[in-house]
Image 1 (cartoon, rainbow, N blue to C red):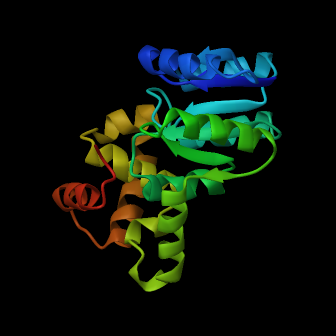
Image 2: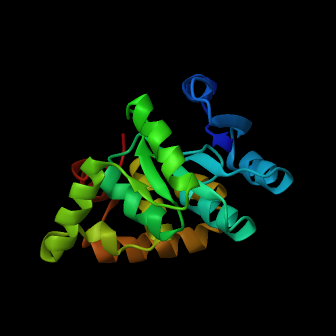
Length: 210
């Protein structure tokens, strides 16, 4: 039996995932959490084979949670779930230690396949994402500038573009406002932009915000 943990802040999403997985004979949901803090606490207390981790939890960035989880439980297979455009976030998640990346709009059968595949120690990406990544690697010169950002710089970009102030971002990222300002300056330099309006336009153009 594949033991699965679900970390998602929407109860209706967790319930839907549990319903889908309850119809299989080899997968059982044995834990869940609605925040990053809860997710880390639960995986330290229980053993799981696969974790379904929402990349957009309310208290901490999904990539940061992923790194913490892989540090605490290096053998736990983590499948990232997101509503975001796949190719913009998947590569960062995979580099951070995720075993796979799945859009929440994927078909139920795709979710089951992904869980079974990563539980066997394999990576999982959808055929559509595989094509996106192949296109990105074969056209290096055309890659968007934000792919050169560090994870912290990229997180700062997304939070500013979503309307958060520097003080709100500093709380969410558990950093001082001064440190956040440094990330903002570095990020803007790399993106070749000079103000928040340009930053928001850039994020919308590249589908980094909903």
